[in-house]
Amino acid sequence: MSKYAELVALEKEALIDMANYRRACVSFVEALASEWASYLENNAYLVSAEDAKSDVEGDAKTPSEAITMEDDDYWHFGLAFTLYPSMGQFAIPLFFRKVKDRYELHIEKDRNTFWITLRRRRESRRDTMISPCG
Image (cartoon, rainbow, N blue to C red):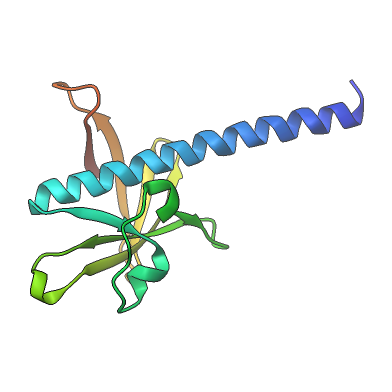
């Protein structure tokens, strides 16, 4: 195999790995929003990290639209709620990365690290449960 063919094969493998990584991260963000909505008994929706950091209400985005990879190698996005309509949107800027089979989650400007593992619920294959782990 020539050096060029080796490089092409490595590039193809890297693209597949990155696509799989992004898919897993999109699923994580979907599960996180769903679990927060369930916990708060309210709608939780995703916004861009920029919208979450500003005072302007952000438009709801799909998980693929909401997450962006920043220079720090973390995915950044915002999780937004409208707890009281008169108060408007409450948004939390978050960032995370996948480390092996867990997700390292941070709230912007907070020193705490939350380690989260996704597990399948027994009663339904499509539901995902988030459980913190240390």
